[in-house]
Amino acid sequence: MAMTYVQKLLARACGKREVAVGDVLEPPVHLAMSHENAALVLNQFNEIFQGTGREAKVWDPDRIAIIFDHRVPAESSKTASNQKKVREFVGQQGIRKFHDIRGDVGGICHQILPENGYVKPGSVVVGTDSHTTTHGALGAFAFGIGATEMASVWTLGNILNVEVPGTIKVVVNGRFRESVYPKDLILHLIGTLTAEGANFKVIEFHGEAIRGMETSGRLVLCNMTVEAGATAGLVPPDEETRSYLRDEAGLKEIPEFFGPDGSAVYDHVVEIDAARLEPQIACPHAVDNVKGIGAVAGKKVHQIVVGSCTNGRLDDLEIAAKILKGKRVADGTRMLVFPASWRIYHQAMDRGYLRDLMEAGAVVCNPGCGPCLGIHQGALGDGETALATTNRNFKGRMGNPTAEVYLSSTAVAAASAITGVITDPREVH
Image (cartoon, rainbow, N blue to C red; front, side):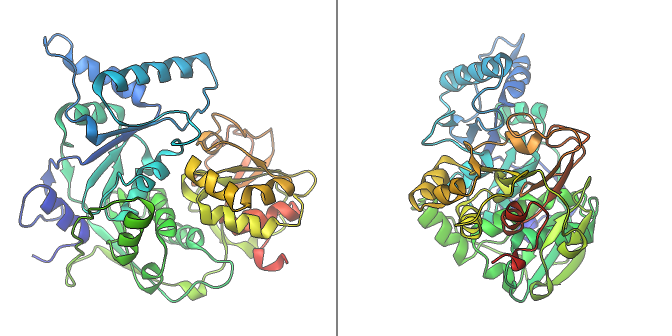
C-alpha cells in the first residue's frame, strides 16, 4: 500500500507495516506538552488515581514538557497559585522539561519545544493547545488535545482512538516576491480552503518554495493549519530539517528521515504559485476572511502586535527592525513586540534589533502569549483596531469584543506601524 507521510509515521509508531485512512490506532506519545493549563490536567490526573490505592505517577517524566507562557508574569493571585501547584507537581514527578518564568530558558511553548530539540521527525506530539500543529514543521505528527485526554496520556503514555486522517497535499512552487512571506502563503491557503476545508485532515506541504524555506517559515505554515480545521500540518523532513536540528536545536543524534510514497493517494491536491502571491490580510472576524492588501490598505490601526508563536522569531524581529530603523511609529498608534522566546530576545538584543524597534517607539515586552488571547498585556479598547502577526482574529480574541483584529505578516505590520494605517510594505522606503 502506498502511504502518505502521516500514514507512514503512524504505522512506524505503532509497529505496523501499513495503516489505511480511517484505521483507529492507539499510538505511543513521544512528547506531551502543556502550558499553564497543566493545572487543569493535574486535577484530572489526580482523579484517575483516586480510590485506587496507587501513587499518582506519570508514565515517563522525560516525555512531558510544561512551559509557562500564557500569563507571564502571573497577572493574578489565581494564576500565581495555579503556577505554584504545577511547580510542586513538576518537582514531585521529576519532570525536567519544565520552563518556568525565567529570562534565560523561558518563552512560548511552540518555540521552546523546537529550539530545545524536544521535537523529532517521525514522532507523535500532543499538546493541550490547538497550535501544537506547529511542530509538524519538523516532521512530527503534532496535534492539540483536551485536558482529560492529556491526563490519560500522562497516565498511559499513548493517545487513545486516533483515526488515521486523510491528507490534503499542498504543492507550492515558484519564489516569493519582495515583501511576501510564509505568513502570506498560509493566509492565502486558509482563505482558499476556508475555516472548515481541512476538517479532520492533515495538510502536507511540498514544492520548490517549501524546499527553499527555512524552518522558521515552515513553523508559521504548520502553526496555522488548524485555522483551516486541520488536525495537523506536516512538512516531510529534509536537509533543512537536519540543519535546524543540528545547528539550532543542538541535537547530536538525528532520527532517520522518511517521506511519503510517490504514489500515495491524497484526498485533495492544492497547487500554489508563490510568485503570484501578494501580501495578504485576514479581516475581522474570521481567519479565512482573507483579502489582498490592496483591498484593505488605508484602514486606521490603533495597535500593532509583532510576535507570538506564529511570528515572533528572530527573522521576524529582523524584518521589523529593518523597516522601522530610523523611522517612527505613527502618532496615535502603539506597537507591541513579543519575541517568541528569551533565546530569541537575547539574540535580537545582541544584533541591535530591539534597540532599533524601541528607538522607533515600539514597546518590547517579555515573551508570552498574553496579548494574542487578550488575557494578559495589550488588550484593546472599545472600538479599536489591531493589526497583528498572531494567528486568530475572532471577536474578542484580543480582549475586547467591540474591537477588530486584522492578521498580517511582520513586514505589513511594521510598515503599518510607521503610517498608522494598513500599508503595503513595498510602498515604505
